[in-house]
Every structure is written in C-alpha cells, then in structure tokens.
Length: 27
Image (cartoon, rainbow, N blue to C red; front, side, top):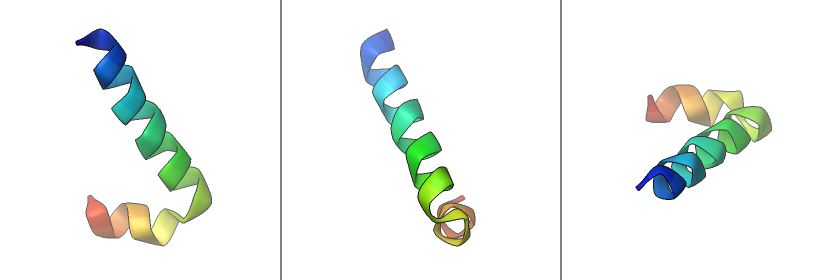
C-alpha cells in the first residue's frame, strides 16, 4: 500500500514540476 502511495505521490510531484498550470487545474 505504501509503495502504491509513493508512486502516486511521485507522479504528482513530477506532473507539478513539468506543468504547474495543469497541476493546479487537476487540484
């Protein structure tokens, strides 16, 4: 379960780093 959470968290961080506008839109 923790591994899955870490993957999702890392994905969000990557997405935020690539395109902040899209990140804000998702949030």
